[in-house]
Length: 228
Image (tube, rainbow, N blue to C red):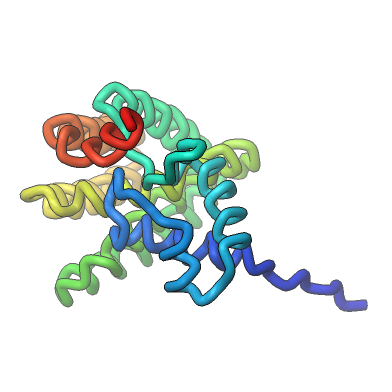
């Protein structure tokens, strides 16, 4: 007997559309969102939009200010430091387990992703590159054989992807990121996990430093709204 596939609700579809718009940078960090305008653009009523925004708030992708409005999330330099520390803790644990439990699959999957990165880079397709960047780190969790690590990471993957889009616009960030992804794969192939983890930490810490240097630009909208 075939299981019945539950159709996606309107609110889930709306949430998916808005989530992708945030991740892909169509909405800037800290940007004010209008329920009415979102409903008009998506040709739906305000109800599924409101439900979708509530879901995205749970994912940390939007902030909702009662009686005042909604903004795309934005983070202070301190919050960026905190989320980068959490990200490293999760990725370090996942990578250690992946190397120990599924090393062959880990290398095979990372190799496929790196090839996709090379194609995207050569084609100057920033969106494809950023998607592959997200996939690269997701592989650690796919191969770690720990459902709790994987499910915890999923709570933050959308926010991390949106930050990745923002950071990619900073000078030289994508070039450094590309080099580090290749180097980490080579270190995994060489069974040098310690060196790979040191590089992973520098890779993640650089996000924190870059964001902190530019944090004032993207917090302005949320800051002004919170004062209203």
